[in-house]
Amino acid sequence: MEERASATFEVTGTTALNIDIAAKVQSALVPYLTVVGGLAVVLLLVIFRSVLVPVKAALGFVLSVLAALGVLVLVFQEGHAADLFGVEQTGPIMSLMPIFMMGIVFGLAMDYEVFLVSRMREAYTRGETAGQAVVSGFQHSARVVTAAALIMVAVFSGFIGEDGSLIKMLGFSLAAAVPFDAFVVRMAIVPAVLALLGDRAGWLPPWLGRLLPRVDVEGEGLDPARSDRQGPHPVGSVEARV
Image (cartoon, rainbow, N blue to C red):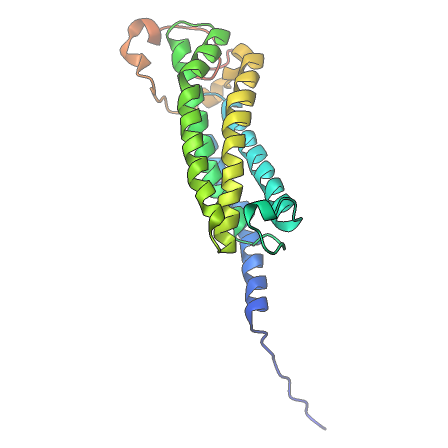
């Protein structure tokens, strides 16, 4: 009988390498977001002692990422206003872009969230009502968030002039994501949602409240009059009662 030798072939080259990298990045994207987002939700849950505040922060981050990806595809893939940003050739978005952009946007978004909500929480512990705490906290922290966002936009906008496609895409996407997250999500949607929720924003199941460690962020435990205060909190720290 004639024996047939089996041979194996390896596909090499830049195209095959790019396909492998794209597959690896795509498979790691969901676990990456799950771990990072899950840890952030847990930390915000411990700090603010509220279920709705961390969930709201995570949903706002997803909204900012989707908006940035949409603008990125519109310019770099579809070619709209490409000449304005120095895009000479349009094409598919690089596979490494989403994971780089999501990591940076997530860190900035959580910073802005903590700036705003912690100041609102501090205003409530000083005796203000739920609505007053939202307004007072926004008035005192909005300028900090605005200045920080404008600085980051200026920094990321400088990357748009680079020749490298990855650097150009990353700078453009971040320059679009930061103002959207800061001005639309954190400074418009977040105060509106907290004002609509009112006392319900601080909802925390009793069993979960017993499991979570108590973290005194504002130092309210040093003042007996403030630490003994009872009642629902607009942005956390008070557990639901049954």
